[in-house]
Length: 99
Image (cartoon, helix red, strand yellow):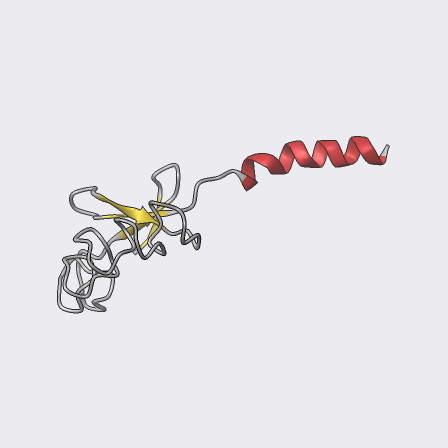
């Protein structure tokens, strides 16, 4: 009986464990800006210091202090508290979580 309950629980929980992490997009253009994964080895993670979306030198990174999406002064930046077009956070179903 315990085995059946554990197997049923595994089937129910498995889709939740395999969900993609939320990702960032430019709210006006829809441009993908990386996912919000803590994994520094994921090539699309904003926490990968060598990846396109996590490097402090990449034009598409929110970690580039001189780039469009990382500058404190850019209207499109995640680091500007007054930005009116900061990147949006979206789930795998592309439903926005808020800004």
